[in-house]
Length: 493
Image 1: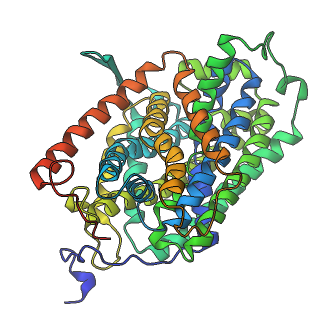
Image 2 (image 1 turned 180 degrees about the vertical axis):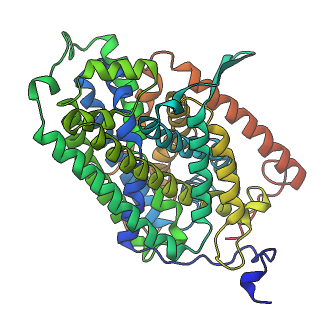
């Protein structure tokens, strides 16, 4: 019986992945991951955070943060190319047989929550633009807020909503998993096709915005917009949280290190090219939109967390409802492309950890025919589908805070630790102006965490995930006689 007709046969753990992604495909995957639906649906949220067009500061400073943190990823990704990204880096930085094993496990553990949150946010954004075409999709069937009081930590709150748009979001998530259920070389070609759609959509928006631009409206700053008050900095912190979400994705190529051609050169190049290109597009596009749609109208959408399809409204103002419908379809394409890239990259991370013996063994299974980690892919898609019941603003805030606390901070400091611990380690790419970018990134992440109003809510989520992760790791380590309860594990890689 041909192999293709034996779906139950499983390739052995450790089966090599295919190096089929070149610089063009890697940059395309990064860009569609970064752009996605974020800038098209978060404009009302970021303008609401700062109360006017001065919210552009959030995107500008967010670009600077992306470049600084991108240099961290570039050095680590070139030095340690392989599936897993941060899992591999954190394990090596903090000692693969002791503390690094715990920290890398905690990274995978938080990714089991933050990666589905990221994918779900793209799917919810997809459904929001579908709501412009079919307004009935936003009619809520059920809306509930669940609360739980925890000792020492305080109250945890979770807002759930079910409506027709929720089913659209879940459908987008499951269809993405279906498309990714194939060999990586075919995915590389598909990523370029998706990239063309993304770039075409942004190009059209920019051209329309510039030809209908009203400078007085775009720069209609409210009184005291730039007064350096407490409200200014809390607003800036909230705006930078949203812009961090919009820029994130520049590191996606690092999760695919085993599938990148010439990774020592192509990983840093794909990272920096995608950041610079997307930053330029964001600034021009968002100024263009502010010149057509009054910012006070955007604030109304941001405060109500509804009708966030601002680009459809923007195009409708310029050319009528038909144009608004066309751009809605294009942005749905863009959102889908982002979900596609996210699910592809993140599905390789639990695989790498399981292969290393530091996560649940089922995630190490590779498809016998197409040679990709199919269990990891399906598990990620299933959890993301459940998270589609959360509100978009809650998805973004929880995602960013969890990732900063349990990944980005320890990694930005970790690149300095690794330079000290392993100065002779081969580094095909070295961070420019070391260690300034790493310190700026760490300081910016701390500012985002603690400068916002009611910042404690999402931090509580992260602390709960951390505590439960420590309990799970301790139970596994005790049962298996691993560090810190037994002999340090010698990695299989």
